[in-house]
Image (cartoon, rainbow, N blue to C red; front, top):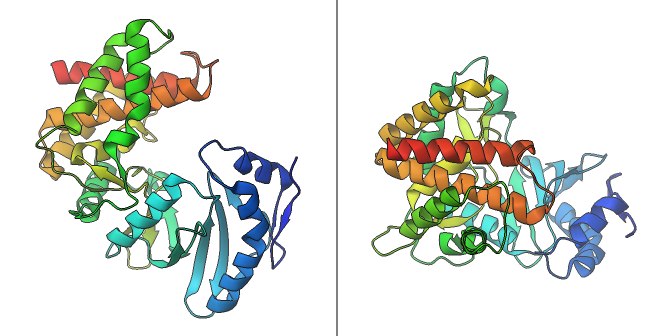
Length: 325
């Protein structure tokens, strides 16, 4: 077990969180990074005149600290042991800066940290289901997808979809050859792999993608509009962008309504994004099956009864059937 990491202003990263992040297979030099973290935080806080909010940091795949800067007002420090996805997120934010995207004040890919302007009031769209219905929420998402997309001449640290889809291709090949078995139907895996290959094949026009635009990554701001946060930093075909939104269903209150809700969303995205309905559904199918593959790879004991895996497979089946209709 690692030891806690003591930061300034009463902030401590508990030992179990340190261990968890150090043991992540996709991070590099994590122990060394944690050893240098307090000094890095001190430098940044001194330079930006930041007072951190005391208490436990928010932990997902990253360490998130809140504070107030005498120079810039409320801020968020987002940090992580070095890994590919952090570099991609930072690159994506740098390229996407503008109206509707959280403001990046400072970022260092080598130190694996960034300072962001805190979005206020910062209420996620997920929490406003009493104000917006699902169609309205999906139209908002489409509007901000289009604002985020842009042509990129050099991928840099962005992650191309060909690499993002790697686990899908590997799992589909093993499933088709009988090397693995499990709850993911072979026909769905094969259909998703075929659609994914079309997305990375000749003739596609890659753009900067958010890669994780869902109902918690659109926040209310002081201008009365919305701000996008937490991009994945992908580059590829536009239709893949809809996948995360299509798979997240906070407005779904009865499982029997899933098919109709997903059908309506596909129609809204097709209309608002100017993409054929078949491409929208293909993007959703690929993401749903990819999420199922991630679940199965990460947990050998995953079964159809696991909520996220079951929802991914159920949605993938609907997307596949709608494509054939």
